[in-house]
Length: 99
Image (cartoon, rainbow, N blue to C red; front, side):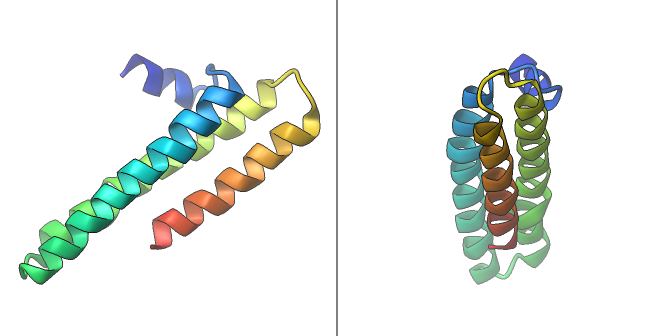
């Protein structure tokens, strides 16, 4: 939980925030929740399906996006790498949230 707060405040290294939290974490959370969503829809449980389909992954995606954005702002390396991390995270989280 401590790392989640550090992510939110942009205190993690950009590499960690982007790869571990946005890319890998985002894929795992969204794929698992998407699979549960489909299973629950087929089981005729639409309210619980909405919980797993949107109420869990969307807040995670927002936290990961904000964390990467803030970490990119503190990044001391090449500015273009920080900008690319921001762009990739915005696009990735929008796509993952829609699917």
